[in-house]
Image 1: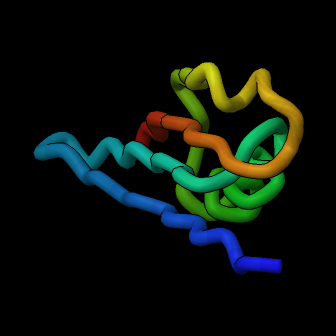
Image 2: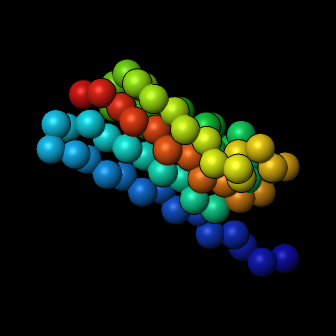
Length: 68
């Protein structure tokens, strides 16, 4: 059984807003991965799901924009 790679990418814009992108996780597991980060960083102002979010759990991307 091969290990699956998961990436969590953080982008911070000039206004201090943070975008978190989870890559390599299918299904809703990406929201479990980012839950504590969301709580630590602030209020979630936008949430966008890729098509992988709607696939059965295994490998997904999720983008979350947080307001500082």
